Every structure is written in structure tokens, then in C-alpha cells.
Length: 422
Image (cartoon, rainbow, N blue to C red; front, side, top):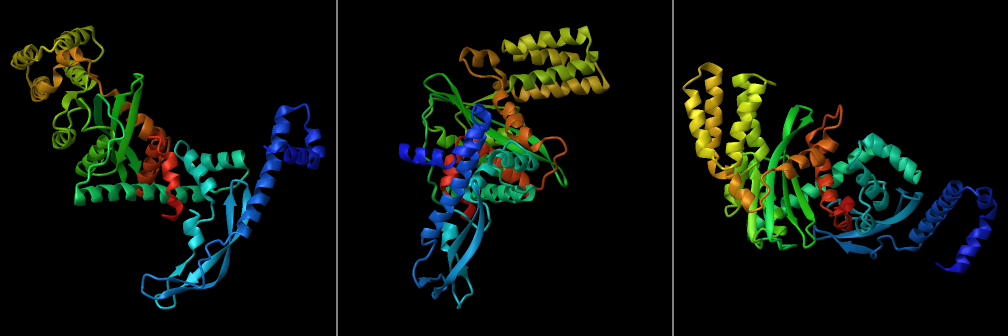
């Protein structure tokens, strides 16, 4: 930075800054306050010198007529430095009645009063915190008051833009069959899917969540998420598009993990046919425990012994032995116990090929879907299932979309596309 400018600033504010000398925290606050004041003044001067959307006396209109320049309209904008006033060129078509303020589109401002920088900060905090907490933190960080309602409307707006972009990408693929370009080329790609419920105004509804993950050349695990409040068919397509970007077609090995739910199996078969399908080990083990509790009681030593024996068979790939044992025990019981044994028998029989855990372990495959189950808590639960939260569908979908963009490290790309004016 220019030394002369720094010397002039130090001289101009020497009295205020000297009062804070010796206290680094106080000095830091004093400098920050002065820089904010300078930033606000500089920003105001710069926008006053620009054309601010003026494109001549008229511009063409979609109706075939012309939008004529009417004059400049002032707008107050809340920035990270404080409020400024911008005079923007205003155009109007007398034929169709449509008006246009080019500056609001070109600058990424949009219809609201938050600057792109302050809006970006609000959205960034809102992907983790409630709107109320975000409002308080914005005031602490920037000294700017942004209401809870404004932040809520903002996140709804930006999140909805994200959802529309994703829907458009899917529509474009279904129309022209252009497969997204792979951004990485992993040797082994995992795909996992699950669902978790979110409390909405009319009850609890399922958000479907998918995760693709792989190891990079440094053996570090990398992940990308997909989350939607859609039916399984639409979600499946979005998961497939994401997997294509993560090297689905280039990977030497594909592994699909899930709990065996019908919708997960259907989407796996439809989109990931060459993937090795593995039923989550812990989910399978949970079924055995549930059966053992019905047979011998919860918390008993006998239950633990019964479960551990069958767990070892399953772990070693002895599914035939386990099935024969369950079939034999069914003949020895009646009522609820027989029904529970029959249910476990059917579950293992139907998923026998996906429970070859000895084979999967020999290939060094993950056998637990902890990545997606953890994602249900980390991606969805941490933000959308905080105490007392009840969402409408617009809000839950939008904030989930925003959170996923942040976690997928696509935040910069989002704001480069100027979502406020989209």
C-alpha cells in the first residue's frame, strides 16, 4: 500500500487513534471504524461517477417497441460499509408498459436494498445459523442492521434461484442428452443415498440426500452432496447428474451404498447399474438386534449372545447358514416372535447378494453408509432440525440448496452468477 496514503490517514486520525494506543483491541476497533467510514464515503463517490445503467436515449424492448430513458431514480442501498444512495437510469416502454433499471441487473443488485456483498455475508451466516442469529451476527461483524425477515426473504430468493438452475440443468439434459463433463477422475467412486425428515407446517416430510465421495491422490476423502424435497425419480436424476460431474463414467470402480429401501434400490438399478450395491452393515445389524430383542428381551445377556452369533455369520458371508437358522427357528415360535423371524429372513434373503460382506471387505470397500447418514445430520439436521424449527416448503428447500452449495465449495461460483438479479 502507498506509504504516503498511510501517513496521511495516520495524521488525519491521530487524535482518535492515539487514545487507543497501547490497547491493541481498542486500536483495532478504532481503525476498523475509520476504514468503514472511509469505505462508505469512497463507495458513494465511485457510484456517483458511473453511468449507472444509462445506455442512451432508448433501448429495444421485447415487444418490438422501445424503452425510452425517463430519468434517474434514486435508491438507498445497505452495504457492508453502511447506507449509500445510487441514482440509476430508468427506462420505460409506453407500448407494453414494461420498465427496466439496467443497473440493478448489471451490478447484481436485484430488486432489494442489500448490496451483493452484504447479501452474500447474510446468506453465508444463514447456512449455519437461524435467521435471528444471523441478523445479530451481521450487526456485530459489520455494524449494519438487517432484519430477520429481510434475511429470510433473501435466502428464499437465492435458494430458489439455485433450485431453478438445477431444474433447468436436468431439463436441458432430458432435452438434448448432453452429459455433464467430469470434473474429476477417481479410481473408485462411492454413491450413497438416504432420507431424513424435516418438520414443515403440515407435518414431517422427507428430504432425500445423496453423497458422492472418493479419495484424491493424497488419500484424502472428498465429498459432494445432493439434497432435494422431491420424489425419488426426480432426486435420482439429480444424483446421477452430480455423480457424472464426479467421474461416474470414468471411475474404474463404482460402489453404491444404501439401507435397501425400495426407492433407493430402484434408483440404483436405474442410474448406477454397474455399481456394486452394498447394504449398509449397520442397518443390517440393526435388523438382527430388533429380532433378538423380540425373541429374548431388550438388554438381556441372552439377546446379546443370540445377536453376536448371527452377526459373526453375516460378517463372514455365511448368509446361507443364517437363513437356514432363521427358517428353523420360525418353526419353533408362534405369534409376534415368528413374524419377526420371518421378517428378518425375508430381509436377508432379498438382499443376500448385497450382504456379501466378506467379499466386500476383501476388496477394501466401505460397507457402512456412514457418509450419507452423517450427511443427513450434518447437511440437513444441523440447520433445518434445530429446536422448535417449523418450515414452509419454500424455506426448507431454499436453505438446503444454499447449505449444499456452501458445503460443496461452490460459493464463489454462485455469487459470480449474480443470483440477486437472476
